[in-house]
Length: 76
Image (cartoon, rainbow, N blue to C red; front, side, top):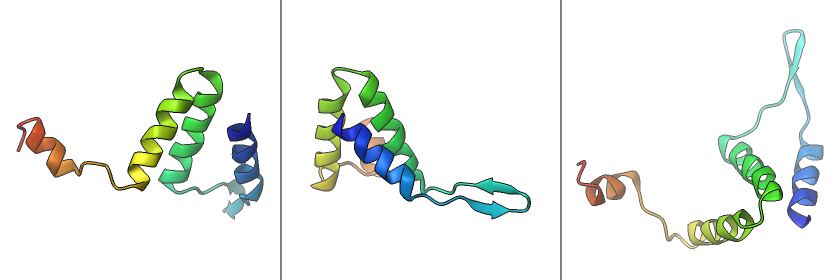
């Protein structure tokens, strides 16, 4: 439930902008993906731990670049 509260706080900080006559909300792709993950986590019992672990690994730099993935898969 804490993740849902954080998501709601983030959404409350977003201000719609008018482009022409229609209001739009503009998010970075990273923010959008995190919000989508948070919503999926809320629906699942095992996803929260997996996503939290993956985010921690990414923050610690334990990720592969696209080129490294291609080399491992022998696509490069």
